[in-house]
Length: 413
Image (cartoon, rainbow, N blue to C red; front, side):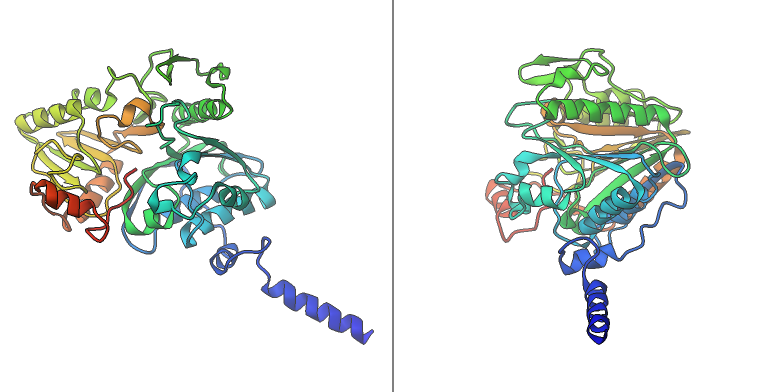
């Protein structure tokens, strides 16, 4: 009897110190002990930001969105890469696991597999088997280049998550500029927009996820809900619809798109300044001629044009010479416009670069709600305080900037 009591006590002590799910690192153990807290306001639109601080507010909001999922619902995540290497990402993975195990939530994930084999330097050490092990509870799919493109220059660069039904009974979408990685969450500027109870927008995102999943299986044409045609190694939509899921205040387009289409430039062409207004741009790159042309027009019409970029002039990443200010470690991709009573935010995974839209998988949303614009305008103002004038650099200085030991770069993604 005494031996049995001792055995029970020992088992209880072991159970008290073992991690909640298998063997895990100390950060994973701490993550598994967190309470999965849902959003307090699961409906409407909310803009969320990271400002290169250790406590990632964007990661917390991703987490709260995950925890909002209803029993038996489905979470679909399309993201370029996941680095299970720190508190934020481990917490998100752990919340997905718990929602699956305790609430019957189905989890589907699409990642860019080429990043892990062998992978760029900033995710060196991650491996695809390691990712599959971390996401053993989920259905994981991968696209070696882009999902819709077999070109070697393409990447599966989308960063969005859909929830088929949350606890309030409606679907939700979260789109962002950030991959799931400690460096992305804690050391770079990022943003994301959450859409709760926007059914047209949700349908557009989930249709694109299904199409990417069909491509990941090696048969892009198998998704009859989103017919495609192939041209030069890239699958394009056959319906010629660009902006999708158009609701009262939001819409989305997805890449890759044919070279003749530039949805950002086309949308900016509808805005007029009439002697006043503000145009704020934040991006890694600014090389897209059609977008630069519209920015110049808006400035001529009287808008105040402010541009924050990461790479200085004198590198191949900046060609506009529009008075850019340089801001280290910014990974965001956003254009925010206010002219009179009109407000517009264009944001997503696509940098305003020449080739970003032609081969990569991307998502870009537009939002005309004033509250979203005000949030981005305040975020931009905070970021601008840390910027400096960009000065053209001669080639040797540019090379030094890009070399190891120089000013540290954010992920060029």
